[in-house]
Length: 300
Image (cartoon, rainbow, N blue to C red; front, side):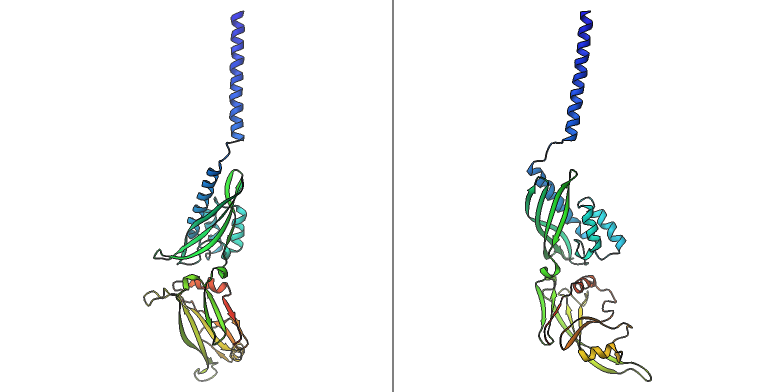
């Protein structure tokens, strides 16, 4: 009888131990060990650097469907879904690749500041490089990184705007306008030419009845072997522009007229129709520059 009692007590004791071990295991799964500051900073730093290395994989000027797929593949595990949605609505203000050259190579972190146990603020610079792997530009960037559902994710990104990042400006005092350029165009050159307005044919052949200057801003990497896309600017008087709109003459073979970029009290500054029809190197960059309304005018 005494032996039976001892056996029963031992069984109860072992069962109790098993329950305690199971309880400890459950508690440890529900409350994993907290990250130290050093561990959290390391994870956040690696997250931002990984994000920076993937910027070149996302072409912001691609078709909408391709862009969404590319963002999900490259950014999906690094940023919040809400941030991806925001970028898809406004891709030209999203981080990624806009041109064939230069392109974003990485993010260099300057500061990493703990805002709370679950939030870090990061500042740094996107480093653009050219096809020759030379540094072309440094674009300031700020990121907010939050721990959401046990995982660190980038929840906010603020980059310097094109206007803030432009430090190169072409100024033309003769016609009264200036044109803001990215740093990569710093050693640009100017090519002068003229546009010709042809008579509207009724009978006989076309004749040149109007003409005016055309100024092209040329990228410093342009060469005869590898020509890049120029930024051509046609200059018309207000009277000439009105005549063109009234179809009293036409410019070039394209059925579409030039596009007005800006005007002052004397001149209209216009972009030739189909100026990039051959899609030369850098045409995407020129499109992006023009999207930013880079012309500023003064009195002519």
